[in-house]
Amino acid sequence: MTATATASTVRATGIYRRLQRESRAAAANPVELVTMLYEELEVAVGVLRAMVRQGQRISATDPAHRARAILIGLDANLDHEAGGEVAVSLSRVYRSMRRKLDEAIAANGEESLSELLDGIGTISSAWRQLR
Image (cartoon, rainbow, N blue to C red):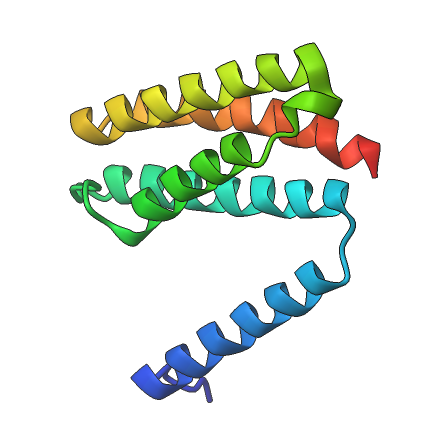
């Protein structure tokens, strides 16, 4: 017998996952935190792509807001003094990703989201190797 998810079960599961992420973040070092943000970014953009595949409009949705907020946060928290040219380059990458995200959202474009997801995956993989 399989249980049907009720609204309260879904809500409780969401709260549990949020608390789990918050606990993980509290114990993380800066590289792990960035890696976690990339994981969340990959999930958000992946959800957007799935929504487009299902014929849904993705503008003004939670995953769109979350993806944009993560990119803004990654860019805003770069340490330009310590990071030098690497920080400048990453800032350009984050801003480019944000433009591509905004264009993909406006066009409701699956292909654009797939390309963005590929780029995110490449950078995410590099961060995971730093751990």
